[in-house]
Length: 354
Image 1 (tube, helix red, strand yellow):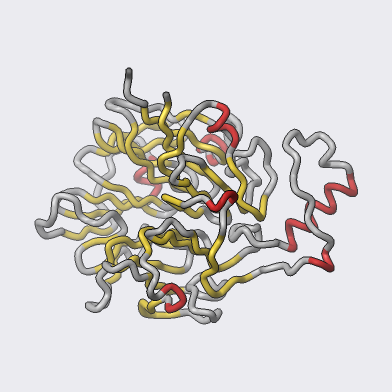
Image 2 (tube, rainbow, N blue to C red; image 1 turned 90 degrees about the horizontal axis):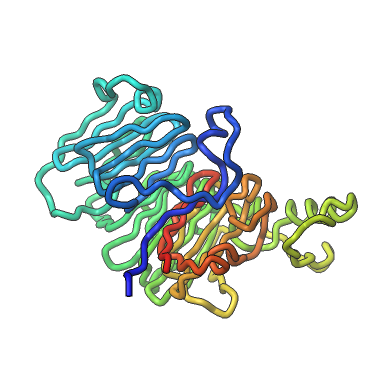
């Protein structure tokens, strides 16, 4: 019997749309594997860097660029950071997406010889990289991080013992400290103390973590339902659609929200809150986009919620959702989700095909 094949699909905004060209639609779209298959993806808004068996490749509308000699990427709409065995460098986005050679980098940092499998970017020895100036920030000596993720204005670090640190902008409660204040230095998220975490994720202005037991915790901004808590904006949008009859042609039925007077809407959740998935499923991975969230369960199912204007939730429409909703396309095709990576307005999922 042949072994299952790993493939990547994407839902949502396309690089063609970013370039002002007609896009192929919200998805699902199968990513071309390239030589030796597709192993990892690092999405920005208008382009994506992928790892194939032949190395890294930058893909944008009408552009394929091999990035020889590099092992990892950290892309943004201002710069692209690449890390290799001997160092890390950053180039302006225009240089990365151009046809000419990359040329001199905007930033460069030599790296000492280290383990064969160093912690993933943005972590670097002694600190972490950012895909925009300043490109390197030292970490205090007391913080030993095994993983670090960047939000739009904040940073989360997963410590060696499963503890979570958060710092940066906090005006939307995305730090999880119970306030809307910013923090200049890493601060332990005390609400999670004593619960070992195995993964963290940072969106535009919201955050998530997964415990070793598979429990999902979320906090921060809930403007588009990205925390899977009742959103006033979405309730008003659904009520307007109902009044105008816009929902009559919808194929997939939605749960009608309770009457406004019976609902406690949540705009900001400043403390981490435990989120139960349907059937109390355990979570194996989580990723956050600008204003949406996606998780993979240990059973291989993909759930998404939050902002859905570009189809990034994978439900076959452009609606937003403030509750976890299973992506039925994978089940219908007999696909098992293994990993999920959110771009700002996209969702990339790695699946096992029979």
